[in-house]
Length: 340
Image (cartoon, rainbow, N blue to C red):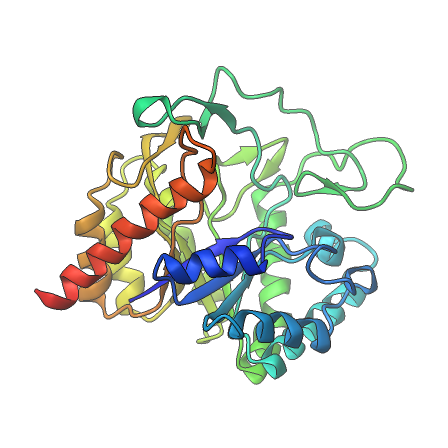
């Protein structure tokens, strides 16, 4: 297994890449890229040149760009909404995937969701009062319907009419998801890129009147059966899977790992289940993370693992310190498994 780090938009900098190298990471996942990372975003396509430059920048630090995570919402809102510009946007997504393949970036992570990651609150949820995030039903904001011109909590069309997108059923969302996979998986396969689906976080059946799709490991079985292909894979967010009641996390790791379906892993821990859970330090949650590492190894998984996100510590560099703690834990666990 390989140790990686994830960076959000604008965070792929010399300083942060040097930090990743110092922590023992070998691979990078570029999260939520926007205009801070790809100036060609307004075209609806990530250009080959932008992708090539990003990869070259990461390479220059002795690191490997393993994946990009999450399309710009404005690039595929019509695909998610089944809007009139759906087919045009799909062709642009195919161009992006072909450009990724040409640039040598092997994985595209995504989450097929209208509400996105929504409703979480901050609090002193981790050990020693370290600040983290969680979903607490009594403290979550009111679930208003999603306004027209918005997906994933981001405004993508300032000219949209007033009103909301209304209710979207599970049947409608699965039909849209099937279109997405049927169109994009063959292009990804041809380009040598794997599409990696993230589960819905929080994994509730519905948010803001819109159905959620990957809210249980069994939903991955349905997704994989829609378009069977090595290019149709899983971004295994272990923290999100841990939030689902009555799920054996290590069994899910073995099931999908042994099938070769896991593209990369978000290796983090939580305490509690939906509708009430809190993210905590990697060694204090409900899942025995060393058992989880063994499950990955035993299943034959040899890909990248990133902390995703961690509690913020009480110091001058709260994000970096939290990441350093998680990365050190994962690195030590991997080294132990390699030795014994």
